[in-house]
Image 1 (cartoon, rainbow, N blue to C red):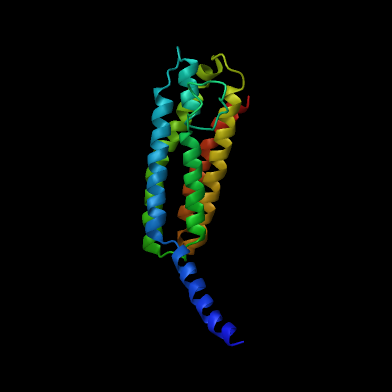
Image 2: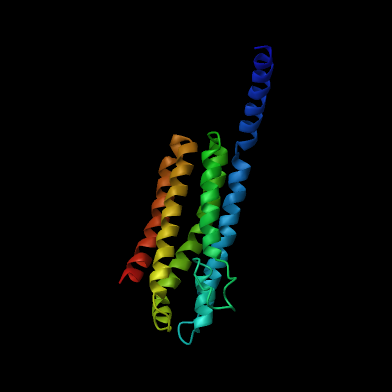
Length: 200
């Protein structure tokens, strides 16, 4: 009994320390959004670099490696390719986890984060417009299912984007919800024509 009464307070202190260490704050989320911005830019650059005509299968696989994980174990030259877009999706997932582990944020912190997300918006629009325009170039390449793989990635990115927006709304003041909703709707709406284009 004496041992239990000694151990319980120690365990309580450890539990509190662990809980505090796992808390996330605005700085963590701002850093996550900065990573998202960098990865979106990398993906946009990759799409822009792919030609409208004359693209190669190798270039397409390099592009796909930026948006999804491809099972290319039979291709020794490409088997170690890592996906930039999977990294982007993982970063979105990590950001969501950090947001969910955060206490409610102040209006100032949320405005800073929203401004950072808003700065990414035109890059997302550019990437999605380009990938629509370059569908014929991908479809013309001698690899089956290429456009289906791109469609899967677009759907995964859309889902992660929606989840990120919803998580952020949960920890920001209610008076910012209209701004958050508009920003989220603008970005997710931009996925629609790209998903439609690759669904047909």
